[in-house]
Length: 417
Length: 223
Image (cartoon, rainbow over all chains, first blue to last red; front, side):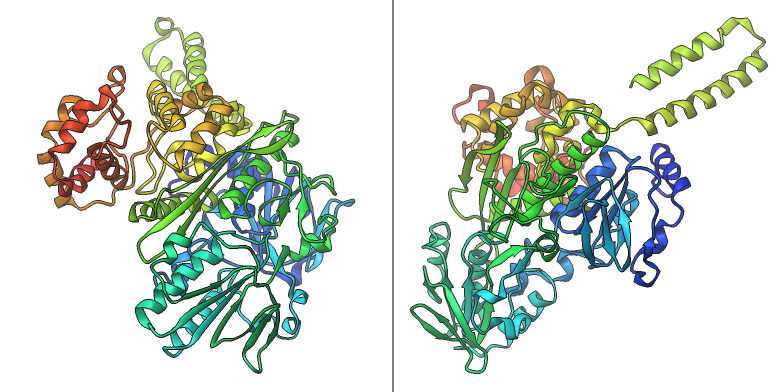
């Protein structure tokens, strides 16, 4: 009970009375049969413990501790995608981007480290293991999955071709391959067509790998095959890296791992190390539960409450959403998580849902010590999110990089503490 | 806080001071205090929480950088909890017009204006300020203390706010943030040609850059 105030103690103990079994559930699939945690009060279930889901769980508990919150996330620890490009350049370790969920546990969030196998909106329950968990409101924050089938030859090899677009083992493996590549080798990175997770992410990655190679393997090149048109934002930063060979509007269409070759409509490019970032869609559970729209890729939501346009009682947040003029960023997912959480608390308490437009701050590291930023603020007009303004940092600088560090410290605490 | 005022009033009504012998009175007071404390605490536990304050939902974007309730724990994003409302409003207006240039804050300042500057300023002013976690070296603090003499004219001996003169509190602010602001004053990019800041900038101009981290360490260490 160290450091727990009387108020916190009363909150947690009053909840503890009705729900004795909570602690024993984590990672215990065998015991999950039938209604394995019968609901005695109001309950919110959150699927996904990333930027959107972790924030949503935290803010429901903060705003109304009488609401029980379950967070279902297969990973036992949180790994940050933002800053993970710095692992590729050796400036950071993956461990430094890995955080425990202890802070959320202290707030009374109950964890199940499993994957949800199905959502049953009519019965208001989710299936986990051989059992199910009932909810009053569901938050789905599934992140992204890949459309392997869009690239010829990719479905057969899938994860053996590295995307490193979900921070974790793939990030570490890609860093290892880059370090092991002989001087003079080609690193090939392919950028998928929009919309994809983290719009500036591939270009920050290009900077980081180019910086690493320029410093350590000066004869090596970074060849970029970008499905999109010329990116202007990073052009100034790339002046420092003559080892970048950037090819715009050059969408990858096929891969042959036996000849170590990727194909586009115009090119065949040999690689020594390949980082193929495939086209993306909402995380599998959102597709399977039919939360996606006609495009079969992304989920349309209400711009105020983040309630799914297709299913009542289910709120979708983060990269899986579409239709708002916002980037698929961690900062936006965090803001959506809060807005969904406070909407849910308001709805469960019969209160009016407040208007909570999101904001976005995206920092990109362009070298080992300098960064740039893109900032967007939004308002809500007639129930729709509308951008007020977008601002860019006037130049790359160490001071922006310092602010990026500060942002990381703050927003991690805002999700996980 | 409402609960506190309420319980002391009820306590006064229950136990009129001169009406009972001292010992019994003492016991009764203790019992009453205990009961009322429990009632108040249970009442607090059942309250709907921060959403009772309509401004809480207006500051969700602020929290990502400045911390929930404005108590930033980072080295670079300033603590805005407990800031005087007039000072807060002035800063938001300066950010929104570009007078205080910041690519991060200009869009967000406009969002604050959209959501209601008055209530957001009031919200942060009402939050209890928690000083930054101490991450600076003692030698740097000691050097900063010595160098801080010229700053005292406005910031006093303890770096507290002087609300009447729109002087913000420096005590307990993150060190890196303070150091960066000193530099911005020195090169005159923070509210250029603003008369209110001319004395401040004059001092910063004659302060060597190398002293900024020490001054920042000193003021951030004050509690």
